[in-house]
Structures are given as structure tokens and as C-alpha cells.
Image (cartoon, rainbow, N blue to C red; front, side, top):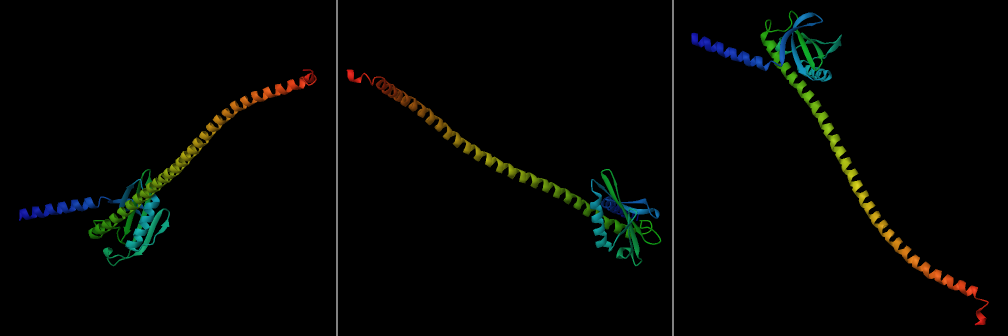
Length: 228
């Protein structure tokens, strides 16, 4: 009997430990809200924007608890809720979202009427709520990572577009260089042709200069032509 009791205790211990490890994303604690210090569930995040938590939480609560929140002085409230895990009595959800530096947190209170949901008063419903909120934690993390992924993809796309622009600019520069090379080659040939033309023109000038001198001499000797 003692051995069986020991084994049962050991199984319960490990079962509780595993359950605790699974629920560590959802902390069961006590926090102050509009109705005083009450038992609650707290989900803590690192470097997650408040608007992401808020949007995910509102959608999650609507889908899982059919909750439509009203906001009053920073506290989100949904009343007259009914869920199988809470039994037949209606309940209310209060929640706040806080940010402190890089840390942010979602705190959820479940008002069951005569008590706020906690393990001492309702262990089964508390475990079910913690299990459900664990999925909310994952949804928030997915949304935050998804937003970071989108930002990284957008930055990559900007870099890819910049690369394409640089390639186009480079192609244009290469074409410009080829065009300039062709123009330089033509200009170099034009210089050679010009120099050759200058040399030819200088020779022609000498020939023409001799002709001019010859004609000038004839002009000077007009009156003496008949005397010879």
C-alpha cells in the first residue's frame, strides 16, 4: 500500500510539474484592477508592441469567449459571458495591457460573481482558462514575429529594388563608356586627319606661294618684257 501511495504521489508530482511548465507562459497571480486586488492571469512579452497585443486579444476573446470589450480608463471589460468551462453562471472578463520599457503584459481577470477565478476556488476552470490563454500567448507571439518578418521582407525587397536600380545605372554607365570610347576613337581619327590635312595644306601653301611670287615677278617686269 505504501509503495502504491508513493508511486501515485510521484505520478501526481510529475503531472503537476509538466502542467506548470506548460502554463509558465500564463502566470497566475494577484493584481490590482478597478474592483481592487484580485486573482488574475498574466501574459508577459518582450519587445512586443501594445497594439499587437490589443488587436490579438480582442480577436481572441471574441472568438473564444464571444466577448465584446468596452474600454473604460484603460481597462477592457466584457460582461454577461457564458462558456462551458465556467458552468451555467454568467461571468465577466476584465483586462489591461501595460508597457514598461521593452516589456509588455496582458493581465486578465475572470469575475465569476462570488469570486474571481483562481485555483483555490475553482481548479478545473482555472486550468482550462490558463490553457486557453496559452493559445492567446502563442497568437500574440506569432503576430509579433509575423510583423517582424513583414518588416524584414520589406527591407529585403527595398534592397533588391535598390540592387536592380544599381544594375540599371551600371548598364547605363557601361553603355555611356562604350559610346564615349567610340566618340574618342572618331575624335582621335579626326585629329590624325586634321594633322594630315594641315601638312598637306602647308605643302600646298608653299606651292601656291611660289606661284604668287612668280606672278608678282611677271607683274614687276611687264615694262621690260619687250626689251629682251
